[in-house]
Structure formats: C-alpha cells, structure tokens
Image (cartoon, rainbow over all chains, first blue to last red):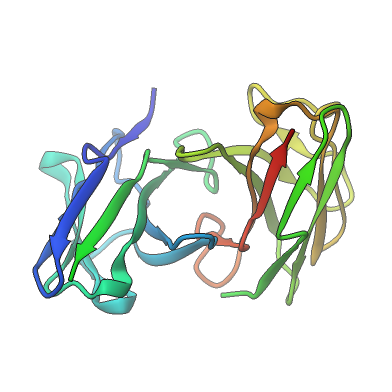
Length: 114
Length: 116
C-alpha cells in the first residue's frame, strides 16, 4: 500500500543550528509531495510542494526540500532554526488512486533549545 | 490560498450526543475535505464534501456516524453523531482546487473535540 514514512518522532535542535527532517514515500511514478507545519493549537500550514521540475524547492519561512527519486525521499531542511519553528511537521503525498487526496506521514515534532 | 474558519474552535461534549462543526471559506472552492486527527496522531481523511450531492467517505467512515453537508461552494458541515470518548480528536476541514491544483490543500484551524 502507498505510504509516507517520517522515521523521526521527535527531533531537538538548538536555536541557530541547521535542521533536516526526513520523509520517505512509496510510489512508482513521480509523486506530488508536500510539507506542512502544525503549530500548537493551530491547523496545518503549507510550507512547500513538489510537483515536477527542479528537485530543490523553496518554501516559506526559510524552508527548502529536496526530492531524490533514487532514495524515494523528500527531506525538509532549514539552515538556521528559530525558536518559533518549534512545531509538528507533516510530509504528505498525493494518493495514486486519486489526483487530489493526500496521505500524511505520522509527523515529526521539532523542539528548539534556546 | 484561502481563508478558512471553523466553528466551534473547541467543545466538550457528553457521550451519546452529537456535534456539528462548520467550515466557512472566503472564496468559492471546488474541493472540500474533512479530516480527523486523533491525539498524538497524523491526519486521516474522513470524506470529500461534494457540493449538491452526497459526500464520498473513506474506508472506515460512514454517513450515519459522520453526516456531511455542503450546500454551496464556500460552506460545509460535519456532524459527529452519537459520540463516544473515542471520537475525541481534532477535526479539520481543508480546501483544494485553487490555483495550485486540486491536490494542494489548505486547512482550517481545526475543532478540538473532547467527549466525556
């Protein structure tokens, strides 16, 4: 079955340090991929998306992600983390049986040390 | 994107009762969805709300438990019926079909439901 895996349940980084959140997907063709962020008590905000073309995509809030077909990965990165980045991050992929339904990963909770 | 609001933002309900959650969008959208996020879990799609017709439910979700209405292109409701403590979750609506395409979805702030 199609799936999205976020292997890290929690990640803790110091403020100002770099960040990489991992996402792996299972899919045969080129997937449509997304990263969302959910701050405490909030809904989900779209950070960035990959549909096709350049495999390095830029998003909001200084985030970027790189699509690597050979590794079935779409990892999220940020060069310098701010305390306000503490949140839950979800990777998502469009379902094969639908052009608009999403499958979400289990999420990674980011904690930021002062 | 779109501005999406949900009402109520949170509620505490007794088991056996029902709660209707409203989702309002500030522009017409083709796609509206309802998700459930159980405590500490990821999002699970409940159904696609179809304007003018019955909602399309995902496996494991049924209309009797989660009736959905969508009377126009900017509004939808989800009812959680005959609630039990297992229904305690965050319920989110989302919209798609905007400039980014049908799969690019934007989410409301969610409704946090606690069933006692």
